[in-house]
Length: 548
Image 1 (tube, rainbow, N blue to C red):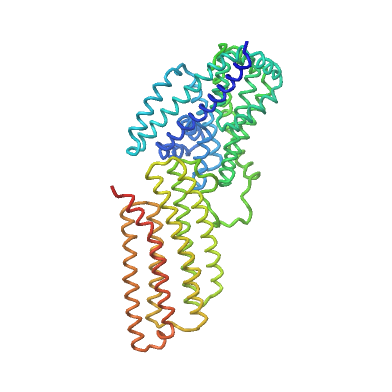
Image 2 (cartoon, rainbow, N blue to C red):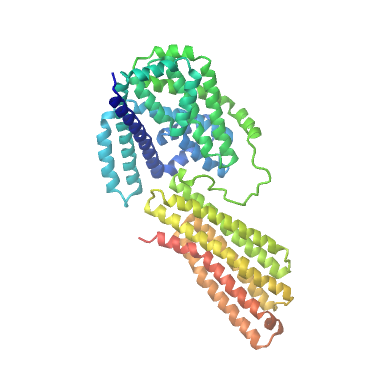
């Protein structure tokens, strides 16, 4: 019989072991995504050709990542690129649900005694490669995580053995017998709160192996609750993503709910089949979970097309939402993604900022050359958009730097923040200085000389071309592109100096148009030079990152 002090100790042990289990799975998953994030992304993308292959790629990816939720987040990044349809994404998620069950089955094998070896070797590998080899360090992290998982399962096994003699627990379990709906709801909520169906499944399997859970119908209801709750986190985490990502997550949740509803009607029959398995077997619980997800694939894979069409009518994109106002690629919590994907998303938003700066220059040039002052409002509007993107990039990149990143990843995140600030300054410079000069020139009705106008047009074009080079440099992060971009800073200075000398020659000749527009010409030279320099800033960061 369990005493009060023993009960308190067991409760602490169970909660501590459960927390260690969650942390260990998260650590292992983080290590895998950081070491092989691009390869896993390639694995998923290579399996998008047909639905059966897509389900297979989802299975393999979830088995590697130890989480179907992580696969859902990878899919969200593909939907931003338009690279995956909702129907194909649903097929991937069906396979991913099986993959996570396969991982759970492997962890129930009699390998718990290996935890000291995994932790010791993982620590040595992680320490040896720290700061030298990113993949080596992350492989050490994976071994540490798996070691913690096995340690947690060992502790849960001990706790479960002691719980088998608890009269209070037996009374609770007896009271839950026959209350299948209540059990499903409670377990679904616990799985959602834990954000890990594998962790809850392993906890239940440990209790079954220790003889704490012996009622087949109760175990079936618990497994159904785990499957329903396992789909909730992906729905919540992708709700701020693209509408396609939301449809995939909701569709996967609907599949789980549909499967659970059908299984609920046959709980007594399923319980009889479960009772035929060996008693006190953790693997029996895992096999039940695996069978549920395998049946779900057989049932739902043929109907992913109709379900995708149904979801398109139920979940519609926001009406009248501006296409390019606000972030497109960093919606939601960016730290959910592998650092490589998060940085790629930040860079894509940064390129959108470059495009906005170029648009501001183009509209300012239209005002200057055609006198169309109605475009001024558009310039102000573009600057507001630029500010919005800057705040989003700064916030997301700052959140990312708080995570444990490799040195290169952390430096790149900081470089992105710095360059985004450059672009925001460039926008302010155009809106407050250059546009003011342009509007004053239009108001004055003064005209540039033909030579002066040609020089200004050429310089505007040069800065807009610099924007193109900057965008390519930011996305490629290649040294050659960076050198070209840096060179454009000094090239513009030479062009501006040449224009200044020619302008002074015209002033010495007392050319009337040059005299009337001299202040405008000089102000535009200075403003364009500063904007060009700010655009070139990313080149220095790229060059620095390639230094030994």
